[in-house]
Amino acid sequence: MRTECRYAPSNPICEVIFLASLRKIMAAKKPFLKVQCTACKTVNYFTKKSKLMADKKLEISKFCSTCKKHTVHKEGRK
Image (tube, rainbow, N blue to C red; front, side, top):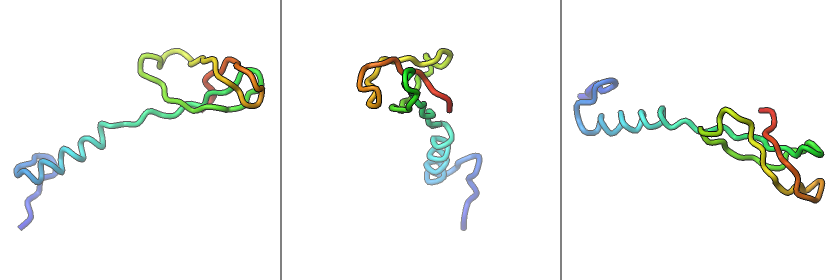
């Protein structure tokens, strides 16, 4: 006999399955951002952005392997 536990888990096994499915829904991954060099426009790095930085564009000083020097890298298009 199988019990239906889709929305209201009544036994412990159904509760574990319910919580596992709930975690999958709640744990959304952050999208990757392309970080490209401002001098030569090549995409050199990929990173994730925090929720605090969501409103402004990312700007980092990184080493560009094409230019062979440290340059400002900005968040590129998606």
